[in-house]
Length: 450
Image (tube, rainbow, N blue to C red; front, side, top):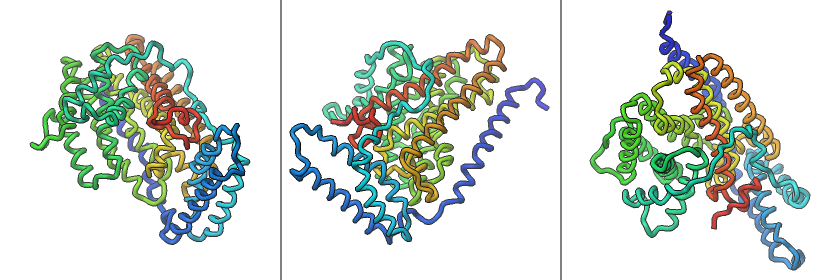
């Protein structure tokens, strides 16, 4: 029907595949059952926590266990055990009070026997070694990015806490890109600020639904229209318009690249509220629902869209950009990125009340089928490997379908997909954002916030 109009064909295939991918997650939304935590057992769960905590505090205080040679490992072990086993405790429904009590006894006995089994590694995730980016980590852009945020009154010059918060996410830039100019590094820092300064407050539960929706609509309007939706601009809105215009300036007359970025960033914006609402039920949704949301919400499409700003290319045909295999490759990276990030942020999200949306938690307790932390993590690593294998297979088919000139031009963007996954994984291990003494992952117990 379309003849040689492959662009139209690709647009149809992409839209139809997107619909296909939505079927299973949508069907799983029909399985939401009675809340895991009924009001009837909140008191009993609180008692279990108190018993565990009291026993722990006594262990710390008593001279029975005192030793001048002690490395104080007991504190770390207890907290790790609590983080690892708490999802299992919380997953019991009200007919299982006796099991709750029994489980407390089991936990208490397991603390010592499990002492050498509690350190897991984020390097269990498979990421091909050749995906690692080379080059030195250049940090010369940071001061300029911070000064811009101060100029737009998003942070205060003398507020060290806010500066440290910003430093954590602008540090991502050299993990993703090793071949940027100074000007590009600054713009990439602005992108990371846009992501986190938009998302962190909206994830904090300090705003009601109407406030969240209003802010997202205001931000979306800025990126699409290039102007403010309302007269009472917020400091962040001024910064976002500044960032948008800098992106437009960088691509010059290559409006296709600019539009591709804007579309991907707006789609990310629109994913924030639906993703946050997955925290509303008292039990986790199926992991496929989270994976479907997070494929967009994790930001991979928006970061790839930003790559079109950094490296505008007029030699790549629109039919190559819209090739369904290319889009699938980005989706595979997004899903793998979601899994590695959820593992790294597991302890942070559990401590801050966001555990219900974390895949590692979901795999432990979904549908009352309780499995151990170790089993859930092994399953998570296995599924993530399947995403990588899918990517590698699709990459091969994609390249084979292209003429040589297109293959040469698109290779840089495929390499960028790989470096984003590798860089995000390495940053997740290094950042104090996910650092915690109670993390089950050895890498995150090293970088503890001071």
